Length: 80
Image 1 (cartoon, one colour):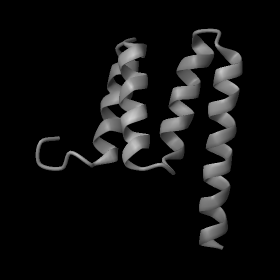
Image 2 (tube, rainbow, N blue to C red; image 1 turned 180 degrees about the horizontal axis):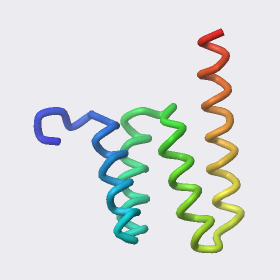
Image 3 (cartoon, rainbow, N blue to C red; image 1 turned 90 degrees about the vertical axis):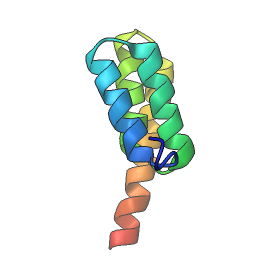
C-alpha cells in the first residue's frame, strides 16, 4: 500500500479479507476507498451490496447492485 497508495485492487482485497473476518464496517470502508481510486470498480460495489443485504439494509443493497449492473454493462459495451 505504501508503494502504490492509489492501487484500487489492494483496497478491494483488503475489504474482502475484512468481510471474511466479519469486520463489515471496516470492509465497507475499504470498498469505498477502492471505488474512490477506481470509480468503475463494479466488484467493489457488488461486495458492498452483499454486506448491506446481510445486514438487512435491502434498499441500500439494491442501490449498490444497480450500480454494479450499470458498471458491468458499460464494460460489456466497451468490449463489444
